Length: 201
Image (cartoon, rainbow, N blue to C red):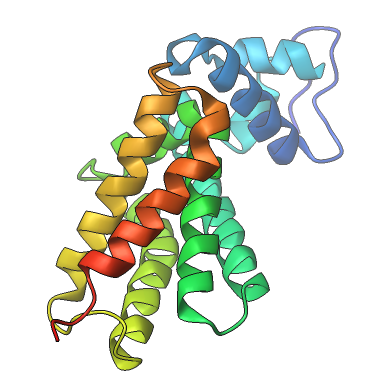
């Protein structure tokens, strides 16, 4: 193992996790442009070379943040859905609320997640995104099976639902709407979604 080039240690108990935590804090407070491996190493207290054991460059760190973000979003949605039981409207409400709270609590991270997943070489990020989006499709399929949503293209229904959630989050993140209105807006969105997507009589 090469020696550190300064007085800070090369080793760290859990360097990868510490780097991701520090990177997300910088992302939230200052934006992705301010992320630099050397600065993170200095903040954590390791040599400037140490981070490259896990992230060969800045892009690798950003990609790891995006993958971790999708994993956390998936856990957040699944936890919310599990807590809502089997009642379909309750599951929709819990999932939509959990998503918008995640999107407003982690605005910079969410932006990084979505912009990163569309890069041609971002296969790992695209795969990480499949879990939370697949969960939304499963929810729509459940509603169709129970006769509460119209039959048809689940992807199209999902896009409309996703656009609604993103719109609410964008308004709050852009300081166009008071964050205290989030729950009420989601409740209205749930009611309109369930009413507008139900089968025709």
